[in-house]
Length: 367
Picture (cartoon, rainbow, N blue to C red):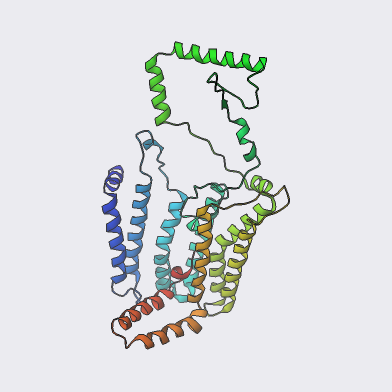
């Protein structure tokens, strides 16, 4: 496995180009949306999983010899989510072939339930940060909101005495008697330590400090701590993220009970999306209470909110809206542009792909 990792990292550009070409070729496989689709879909899923693993290997390339030992032997939760996404369409196809159209929703519900568990675990382990790309991308950016200790952090930073070149805690007056005594003692201790240490030892220590910076232990807050610090806004944020995570599972369970042609699952899913997004938007509103901490999303989190709103377009592709309105509009458009050379041909193929993809829940789930 280590030899394969080294090969992928040395040929990262070649690996990415090959993966992109292979993914594009899967759409040209015969019987892509035919009755017996397990073979082509299995090829597509395997290629997707291989691409995902290769990207993970490339992104975790050690920056120095000292970080090579930091690579973990287990799969991160974000990678597990991506692998599940690559595999879920194959699971749907196999379930439909083995159990039929109606009973396939049992296996789809199990898949969505697994994704919910993993996403909630990611949400918890990241300290209740917003899930980017459904948890598949790590949220490494720090938002601009301040914790209760945030405003006190600068009080612990030492300042430098410009005259003596020594550090002492902020707030200590270096011009009074006590301050001058502390500065003299600190300067004496620093000079004595530098004289007692040989030059080569100081040079080695400096190199180690550069190559191996001290690791910062970051403890993620518990849910009760997070809610007590953030107040009502924190509760709205957690509720909104939880609704975003649960929405696909709720939709599948309702479709399993009422069928794909019922409006009830469609409207409930849309309502969950709208309410959850409204709660997330409410967390950034200004407030007068000092107990509630103000939320300010980072750029990546704002982009994630925009991405989630774009996913609402998929409601046009879900039954019963698709079969009653969208499909008719697509077919009428196809007949209109069919006489036009070239344009008619590509429009026909595009509409054919859209209608074929719509038959798969995993393509239109937005989860």
